[in-house]
Amino acid sequence: MPFPQLTIHRRDRRNRSLITLAGEIDLDSAPLVRTALARCLSDGIRTIDIDLTPVTFCDCSGLNTFLRAAQMTTEAGGTLRLHHPPPTLGRILDLTGCGFLLLGSPLGHLAPPLGDVPAPITEAPPHRPVPLGSVLSGDAR
Image (cartoon, rainbow, N blue to C red; front, side, top):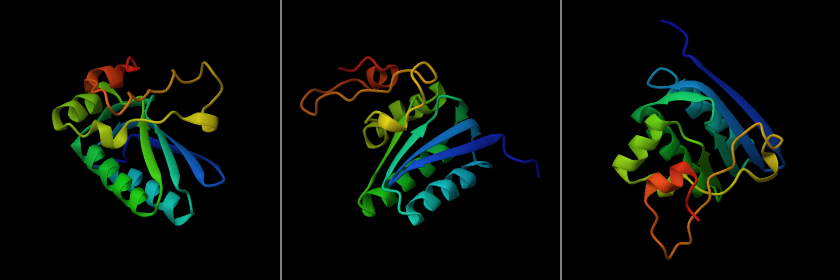
């Protein structure tokens, strides 16, 4: 069995973690993501930001992994947010309507220096619906 084409980098600050995923997230590599996110929770991390800028592909097994991890993080009193999803994941989020569960708050103080990662996705005010495409492109205000 070939090794999954995915790398995972984790950077922690107190109870917050920035996970940067690079490569492809699919049926073969989703268990690696699941393990990394579960380890964050077991290490006491309660705010998990996932930078997907270098991800080239993500299928529904990746979405399932992120949804389950978000649920577990919420149950532990924390938050999990995806940032800069690739077009494949953006399309799945759009089709399923579950983007609001995973997209949102900026990377904050864990973000790499300005210029290394595009500006974070911004959330729309809760009273004004915004098409998911606007959120994914970063145009929501």
